[in-house]
Amino acid sequence: MYRYMMKAKLHKATVTEANLHYVGSITIDEDLLDAVDLVENEKVQVVNNNNGERLETYIIAGERGSGVFCLNGAAARLVQPGDVIIVIGYTMIEQTECKGYQPKVAILDESNKIIELTGTEPAHTIK
Image 1 (cartoon, rainbow, N blue to C red):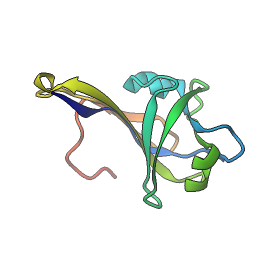
Image 2 (cartoon, rainbow, N blue to C red):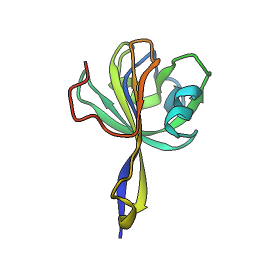
Image 3 (cartoon, rainbow, N blue to C red):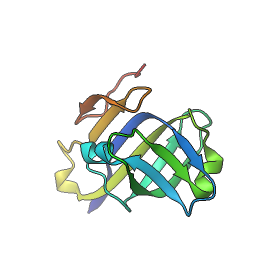
């Protein structure tokens, strides 16, 4: 049996842009993608902490070091620049590999710089 597990998480990212007239997707700084093992065209879930919206889309790699988080196309209607979001990637793994499995979680500051990189999901409130 296989299970869907969280593979990667960019936590408390700040939306820098929302571009309604783009084809679609989310543009993310490629340095941040590397930090949590996400890749261009990979499917992700985006959760908006400001309004509760959830959506699925795919990644476009953004300029390294830019801190960009831009929701494109229809998804731009669900966010505003300045909103705080969570980007989550999933993987499917064999059940026997679940015990001890650890995702890559990056907790970001207001400038979308990594303040903590962990292999576990914190069981506490992040300020």
